Length: 280
Image (tube, rainbow, N blue to C red; front, side, top):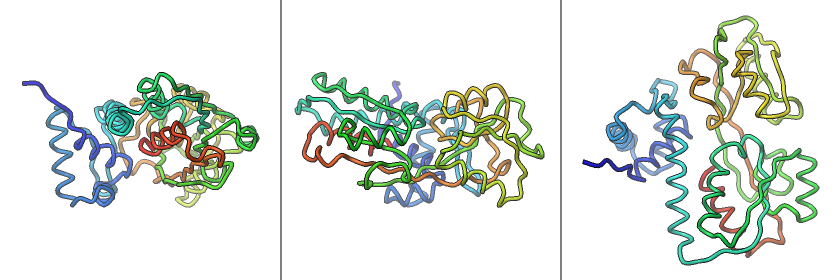
């Protein structure tokens, strides 16, 4: 008998991973915790593998969960776009400014899917410095910017909090004193908060490597130089931390979207903003 992945089950799984807690996910979905737990167990039964590590402090994806997550997010995004956009052809050009960590995640795939639904539309994604992004936004060359709230070039239309997670290099001893840390170079919105978290928990640390790009940070973690705080979507399965008590819990990141005032009422920009909000 063929097995199907129900969108309702995928939505429960994605929400639980994003929230880092079944109870918080249940609140976000307007469900009871037992009902959500039952849906998650049903999805695990369909997939045939455990998808979540469960502990008193919350949930995190297993290896199988990490593999399923990008597919689940894409399926949900395509489903929503198909329901919203079918029968309405979009045209024009939209430039989106994304934080590099987001540009490397499933957001780019969601935007590519939108263009496939509307071949008359073109999208351009920019990932540049905050100063350059602000200049392009002020000049009207960028219509939408999704970034950390302090770096958004205009008043955010909406904000959302997203978790950070630890990526651990192969062979790195997370009990090392001091802990080797791979960091984004300044300016970095959450660099300070990550280091403050280590200090609040009396963890001594040292900078093992720093880079101004996600590519550089990931390369350093792959090389086993230390641990890094990243968005979960950018953590490769081999880097995942499966012991929630091995390192201190990281703070959330607050993201915000700014939209250029001259784009109000533009159907393409409306659709792109909707797609970004659904995925984030």
